[in-house]
Image (cartoon, rainbow, N blue to C red; front, top):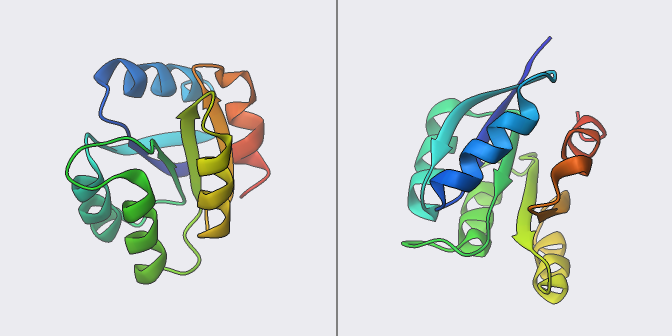
Length: 118
């Protein structure tokens, strides 16, 4: 059974790379957001099983989008996907309700990380 995923990243290249890593897994990308505002809106529309969220995005950063999504759905499963060197911010995101984080662009642990959440 496929689990649904919302990818929120302002980089089209990164969204495509994430989709490529999920292609042959049990996860189906059902929506993509290019900024935090769109991520919150799409979450409200599609209620995916999981969200993969970048932190640095326009309109609303990933931390604010995470907060909005968790306020909407306290059971939301959000995985932060950020660049190396942002460990402090990743820890802060975990404290605000993110379930885990993956360092981009090293996605070899992406599917195992998602699988342990569902």
